Image (tube, rainbow, N blue to C red; front, side, top):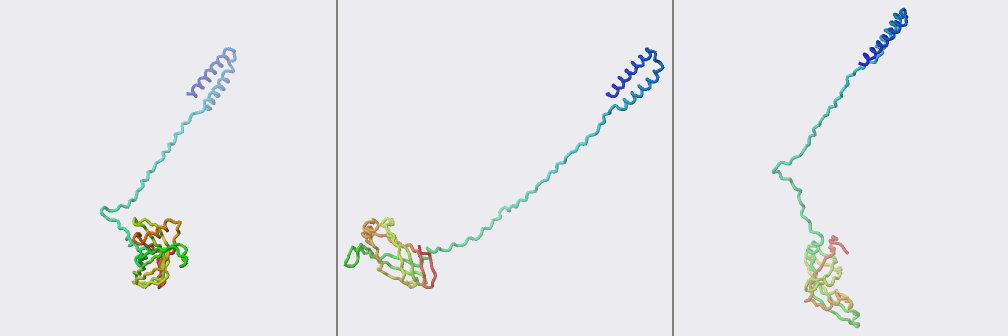
Length: 220
């Protein structure tokens, strides 16, 4: 459409020019001018830009869907899962010491101050019975003597170390242990005046050394 509009305008101009030449008496120059105008019109017609339609290339991306496969390890119904074997717990040292040694309280004697006997504070003489219930001779042992009242409330705790041998399956009685009493300590005065009938006694083993060199527990 743009090309035809330009050509029409040029033809109109040429017609006007030729009419002017005829009116002015220059008829001889009319053929020459007319030839030049035709050439110009032809050139203009050639020079008019043309619209070139380039087909568009449409690129379509292909979407590739990858289906992930999940691997599930199924457990068949009715199949029991095996459980690891549970080891039977081994008795600890505390229980082994209780099985090997028994300590009983067999007597209590309150001793007042006696400077002539070299006793400058009250004491309680404690008679104990040691029983070796095991198959090995006990060389020495340690533990705690626990003195409680009739309601089993601990009132006094006394450390004990015994270093005399006790043969296997034998019983030993001793009254060689004395407890010093502090008159300003309530727990000591309770022990001094309690008497054997008003005391609940127990023993907490700490360690045992056997004649063969083996040991149980530890010394605190």
